[in-house]
Length: 138
Image (cartoon, rainbow, N blue to C red; front, side, top):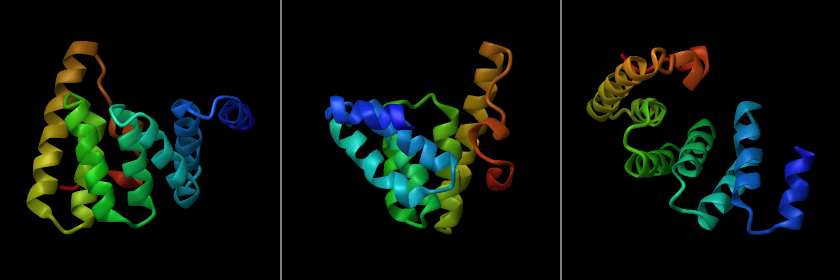
């Protein structure tokens, strides 16, 4: 992580270093620590869908469901064929008790994931998009 913090010091406009540290905070279950970095990354490059996805996941894990939904929807609009974006969006909608929207996002995830499996011969399994406890809502 120090390497990426040095990158930020050397190149203050570098959004990828911020985003990578934010992702590490997400993986280490420290969402509050990663939100500011992800927000800075999104501000520096608002057209990069992974920035919105990581920010949305951090916000969701930090309990800010409404903002999370906004970021995840933006990620989906920027890269509409990415299954994991819809998986995360379905979780956010489910947490917000928006069952119909959660089901639509879940169905989109399943369809896109099936297409990815056919194209790549593997696709993204649930364990690759989130922890085992984060299965998509039924």
